[in-house]
Amino acid sequence: MNVNESDYYTLNINSSVNIYGYIYTENFDPLNPSTNLILANKNNFGESQFEFRAFLRSTTANILVVTTASPNATGKFSVTVSGNNIVTFKRLIRPSRAPAVDIHPNAKWVQNRINVAGGNGEGENRSQLAYPHGLYVDDDETVYVTDWNNGRVMEWKWYAMNGRVVAGGNERGNGSHQLSLANDVIVDKEEDNLIICDSYNNRVVRWLRQNLTNGETIMSNISCWGLTMDESGVLYVVDVKKHEVIQYSRGESEGTVVAGGNGNGTRLDQLNHPSYVFVDQNHSVYVSDTKNHRVMKWEEGAKQGIVVAGGQGQGNNLTQLSEPQGIVVDQLGTVYVADYYNSRIMRWPQSAIQGSVIAGRSDAKEESNQLYCFIGLSFDPRGNLYAADSCNHRVQKFNIEQTKN
Image (cartoon, rainbow, N blue to C red; front, side, top):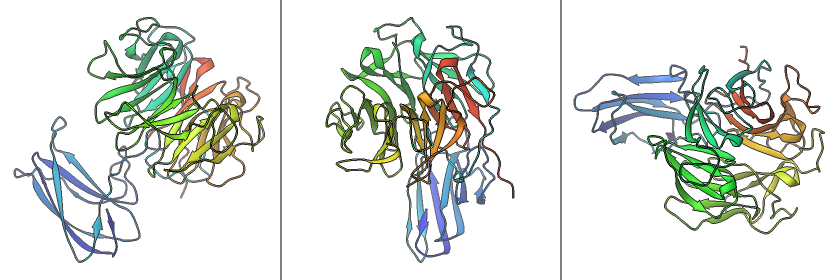
C-alpha cells in the first residue's frame, strides 16, 4: 500500500471466509512473520470482516497481508479504505527465484555450504542426482530440480535424506509420462503445477502437482532451455536455437519475442545461444547470453538490450564471464550469475563495470569453498543462495551471513 501523505487510514476488510490481517512496514518475510509487523488482527470473526486503523507513512512501503483462519480455506476478500489522502495497492509477489528481502550490496554467504539435494554420487536412486540443471526453491525451502540425465524432476524437502519424483522418472523418452534432458523447472503456484523445459523433446510440458503420472505438452517445436514466469502468470521461454526469449500470456499459443530474435550475433539486439532467463517486477528481461559470455537486460518494449554483466570476452577476470548459466536479480538490481566454466558465482551490482566472486573460484579445484559446474541458481525468501553443482550431482545451499548491529 502506497500513500501520498503520512496519516491515519481506516481499512475495512470483508471476506467470504474467516481471515486474519497484518500490516508490515518496509518488507515482509514469510519465514519471520513478526519482523517489521506494526499491526495485527488475529480475531476469528464470524462475519468475516474487521477494521484496521493504522498510521501509514508516505516514505516507506506499507504491506497488507491477509491470510485465511483455516489452512485449507479459499475465498475472495475486499478492502475499503477511508482517509484524507490517496492509497494505492500493488500486488506484491517476489519474482520467481528472487529473495523476498533486500540484500545488502556487500552481503556475504557462508562458504561452508550444505547439501540439500543429492550429494551421494551420480545415480538414479531417490538419494541421488545425475547432472542437475534447472533449480527452483519454494517459499518453504522445498527444492525442485531437473535431474537432467535421469529424465525426471525431483522434489526435496528441507532436511530430507531422499527426494521424490514429481515429473518423469520413467526412463528418458518422449511419452507423456517421460522427460529427456530437461533443463529447467518452475512452480506455477496459481495453477498448482510444474512447468518444465523438456529440452531434448523440444517441448514445454506442464505437470499438475496432484497428478504425478503424466504431463501435458503446452508448447512444441521449441528448443527450450530456460524459463520463468512473472506475477501475472506470463511465461518467458528461452529458445536456444532461435537465439531469442519469447513471452506467452496464459492461454496463448503464439508468443511475442521480448529479447533477441535477430539471429545469432554479438550486436545489442542479438543473442548467441542464450540459456537461462529472469524477469523482474518491472518486466525487464535478463538473459544469460551464453556464447557471448555476458548477461543482457532488455527493458519492457526495448528493441535492443544492454550488457549488465560480462561482455568483455571469455575469461576469468572480474570483468569477464565464461558461458554464464543461471541468473537471479534482487530488488536493488544486482545480478547474480552462475559463471559456468570459471566454477564460480558472481555478483554484479547495477551499473558496475566488474563483478565480485561470492562463491567458488576460477581454478575449479575441489576445496571446501569451491564447486565445479554451476548451472541453476535460486534464492529462498530470506536471501540464502542455492546452486545446482551439476558435475558433483548435488544442490547446495549457501546461508547468508547475518549482519551485525
